[in-house]
Amino acid sequence: QGQLVESGGGLVQAGGSLRLSCVASGRTFSSYGMSWFRQAPGKAREFVAGIRWSGGSTYYADSVKGRFIISGDNAKNTVNLQMNSLNPEDTAVYYCAARVRPGSLTYGMDYWGKGTLVTVSS
Image (tube, rainbow, N blue to C red; front, side, top):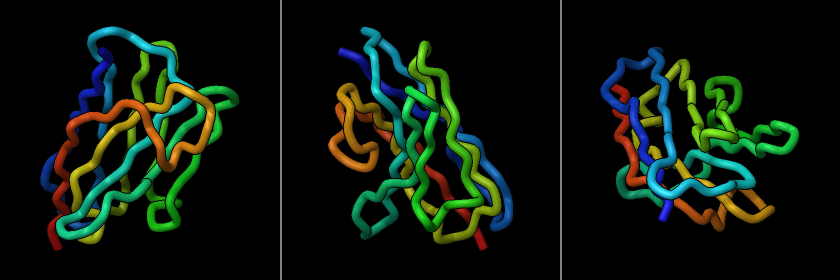
């Protein structure tokens, strides 16, 4: 079964930047699109950004629009998240996810990574 592995998390000061990456390993699969989600301590997991491979459309949560950029490579099932102007409210575990069938990239994903922790200090 395919797996997703995130990397790039860490500790950064407010105003700084980080770049997260996600790579599919194991048995390869074709995806409709991929997304990033995050879960802050004591809060529910939330959608952050998504990319639909056909046409390359991207989608962002209002809270990160203008600061985060999602990109990726469909053939390699890889997706990146460039995070700029980070603030303490961005502190969370960030998860990569892939959707096999057409549909929303904000829920109902088929494959998930285990997450990578991003901590933004004030």
